[in-house]
Image (cartoon, rainbow, N blue to C red):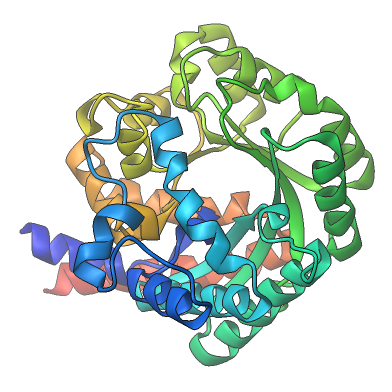
Length: 356
């Protein structure tokens, strides 16, 4: 089957995106419009010339260099209307490629100002997601990120907002705050330093994930397991410690993988060297995700096409998409209903392929 036909099939495939950063998902045109609206000077005044500043090139040398791009975007998102707009547009973009549920994550402290509280940031995100659901049909949830580079006061403020908005029994059709994440430069800020938040989250019944293993070394992966996280963001260096990998397999902790992201941040040297297939063959649960669709200039269909290049078959990708529903931070009945819809749609796709 030709690549274009495969891409068309994968665009039709019902999908979830479990690892999607709101502030990494801005459309370049929206960046320009928000800057003009709020009189924020950018390095360029048109989209083509702006792209090198808002999208990470393949020549990006490290996770830190990747994260530095966000510095240009943060000032644009310190207004409630801007946050709501970006959340709404993200749902529209997801719906265009048949993503049925997206878990949107953000660190509300990055948007907070003297005029915009962390509570108000989350309210704006939820408004945008609700409007997106109404207009485009894609459901969503919100994951609150603590930042490794933030001090205890900032992270405590974000955590308090998370607790205020958290809904354990949230329905897919009612966008809500559902979980906790820890993001940022893990090479400088060890995961274990944030243990108190994860212990409190466990006591409260929050769903939890954690960026870990995106940079060299396995100490942050080990800490994530010690803190009983339910999912791991990236985890690309899990292969470096067989005992840790055995434990992930035993507990069936899913990895939230972003193939293009991992290549751009130099978490892996190239797509061909990405361990996703080895993880899958060893029994590690994996999911494919966009991570930062705006900054990378990608979408989830492209990520699935990259998985084909890595050696996954179409049938394996269908199965992984279906299985991803099991890993959503939603109540079991919600996941079961969504999975049944995915299964029926995938069966129809496979049947139509056999007929043709």
